[in-house]
Image (cartoon, rainbow, N blue to C red; front, side, top):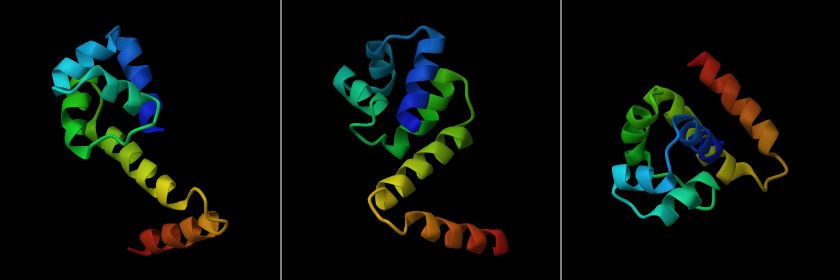
Length: 93
């Protein structure tokens, strides 16, 4: 989700992974792993990434949170039911 979005945004801007790595002050391997979802994206990088790619920080935060939820639930047979219950609870909030 977030990794694929970041890759799409980077490519749309015509940036190389090493350019993004330099902007975040990380190594290129980290950017590669973020984009392939092999490594989670640190929430602290979202403000810089949103500025770099010209997208809202809330869009990236939403995907970041969705990734967190997915990682917790992905192997659970009751995941969809649990998400439905959470969704209803959030609607009542």
